[in-house]
Length: 309
Image: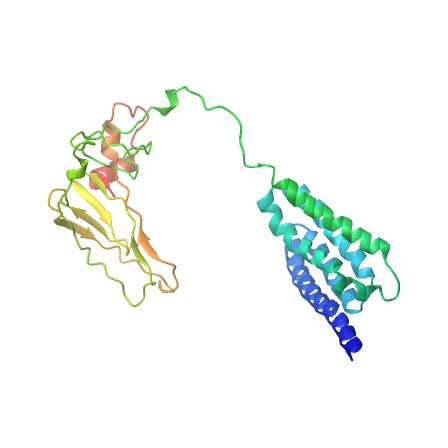
């Protein structure tokens, strides 16, 4: 009874692996056909055929399955190296699954039922070599750094001269304050000696509340801008608020009435990470902006709306 049970398990495991290989091979073959028709790589079509045939041979418990899969794994390793080199993160999606399946095929519970009609030294040896080659390739890629770029940054500052107009010390007209993103304020009232004495001057409630059509997560992640004598901020629904810097009083609000044909319920979250400020007239008047010549269209825009958010 135990012998029959062991024999049954011996037939079941290769069959399960064969079904898995067949389904994966057919799926890969279908995608490979479409990709080849679009002028893409033929690898997926050929590999899909090889994997599907390996699955069929496994279901038939033919030892040729080992040799055929060895060819597929070896060819996949060579193709992956040719396409992306020793780049770990690009090799993983190309080789990891086929390496694992090759390793599983070498396990006694999957391999021995295929050898009932005699040993298969070429198939077993070939698959062993292919698995080792794929593993060595993966290990070698861990010690390479294909994303590194070597060189020196020049110290010439001729090309780093800002063409932006002068900004008042108390303004913050961009996410990083300046176009260089230095996030530095020249104001000197707050110092290491008195920063601990800062107190809240005011706070506001935007009134922008979640609706039934919104995702679960609504966030406020924007960096307010200070320009033109106002503070500009935005809400989760992209409503823009202009506030008095001293009191926090709302001076005006703009609601773009954002809409989506499919609604927002399926979104991961809704947020506004800030607005941008641009004064075209100020750029034209800047002494540094020698090349900032406003076009006729630009002049019309500057006259109608000289400052834009």
